[in-house]
Image (cartoon, rainbow, N blue to C red; front, side, top):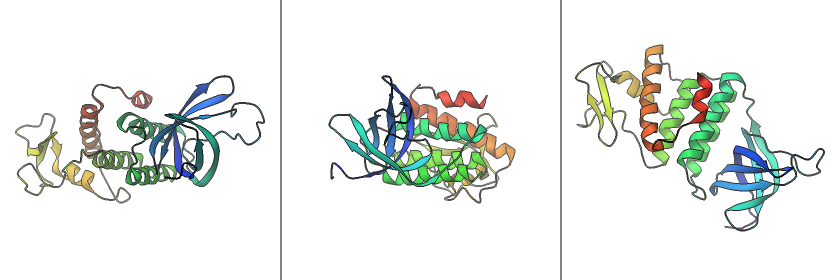
Length: 232
């Protein structure tokens, strides 16, 4: 890779670094997560040091060696999603999932594209929960933890009228009782390739949210998601 190749990127997280700089966690299409220092961006009227914004598609140039490089330049490269209120919390949640479940310098271009699509969908004010559930499923798939949601553990098609329990590593099994079960239609909705046409009632949304939270908690291995607290 050309060390000075421009990278497609989004800002996942920022924190202050010194008096006038920021330490950025970026999600790039070409390199995966990358850390860099944006020097002087907090200094008033700093020429050439515009502060990169979250949820803005960026083109960046990183310079230097080591795990933390320097942001040499950054410019908008496309759509900026203006998120506010609950939709902003949804965007922060997606950012934290990527931060907690991916590694630095591990390119995942297809995940980057799905992240961009999810952020743009939130910016268009599509119903947020189907977007979040779609991204969670896609994220696990890209990380090698793909869920089988259209067939049960015995390789039979999911029956939308039956209820199932989902066991990580085994798949869906017909539920023997109602406790911790999920409707077959909910599993099929989660398996959908496109969130834009997904119509889930309140029960299905609740079931999907609870199921994906349990599965993600397994892969987070006890690490909390601070962004979840914003929804309370």
